[in-house]
Image (cartoon, rainbow, N blue to C red; front, side, top):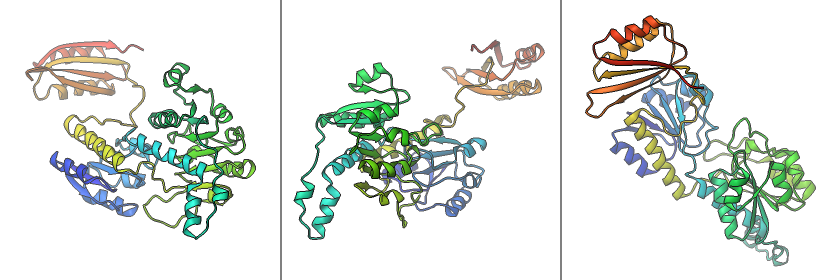
Amino acid sequence: MKVLVADTFEKEGLDELRRAGCDVVYEPKAEGDALREAIARSGCVVLVVRGTKVTEAMLSAGSALSVVVRAGAGYNTIDVDAASRRSILVANCPGKNAVAVAELTLGLILALDRRIPDNVADLRSGKWNKKVYMEARGLKDRTLGIIGMGQIGQAVAARARAFEMGVAAWSRSLTEQRAEELGILFCRSPGDVAACCDILTIHLAAAPETKGLVDASVLKRLAPGSYVINTSRAEVMDYKALAAAVAEKNIRVGLDVFPDEPAGGEADFKAAILQAGGVIYGTHHIGASTDQAQQAIAAETVRIIKEYMRTGHVANCVNLLGRSRARYVVVVRHRNRPGVLAFTLNEISHAGVNVEEMENVICAGAESACAQIKLAGPLPDDALQRIRTGNEHILGVTFAKVPD
């Protein structure tokens, strides 16, 4: 199977894919037109990317392309809707970078509190400014507010407790019971988190329902002098409102993500938020960029591809239909012989009924199998009768309505 890896990737992962029998094409700098051409030229079945943007034009460049694996957690750089229209499955590697992002989050918090970058800059320019930089609040007994309590948010909370901080949080999936189990304060809205914390950190995935979630109405509930950290996605925060909060409330800000940030590894870039004044520190969208995280992500990417080779199943697929439209199911027990499924599907097709899902399980000994075929509508009695009697290798057929 041909695999195109179009971003930097761990050598151990590339070697493991080759050992698994993959024909690996490694073009770590392919992006834009070069990536579209590489997809067309390579005839790849699987495309692996990290931060590289994958557009509809790229997805349509290769007829063999079946799976795109995002070697990371977020997948907002991939046109998932276009992939779905072309029956290309998109997978990601959730949680594998959680520790790395949590570590950077705590690093930014510490940097803001002690103004570490400014300390370094003055020392390098020959200035001694102890009088300015000795003024720090400290983290002990401060409240860290977390918006988004997935694996990254939970990893941040664990590290905050090691600093003897209190933690308050809101997440779409967080319940009062789960918050109690985690030893954190449950909040009913993002604004409630902002109102009760000294430091606000954002850990949300980019999605339509999270776009601009941390807006002016949330930021206005922060106390003057609070800190704000965003190591998730720029889309989840209103950066103009953030700039206003910096000016009006002396908010300190630590960012790893920016609106319109470059897609590649090197570019000229001036982040507008850095012109807001005050204490604003930024890193270059490097939250997941530790050796440990990249090794874990590479291992997960390899696992996804190997499982697809072995079973046809795509682990961590993000563009499967959430709820099946199937309303009926026909179960066909049959001898494991050629043509049985083709015969059955042909009869279903002639009846004008669409197949929504299908699974064929082979029994021990490989002499027989059981096909479960889920349908959009009912099969006429005559079609069922033809399936039952029309092929000598069919052992039994049942038909039923799928429970609601």
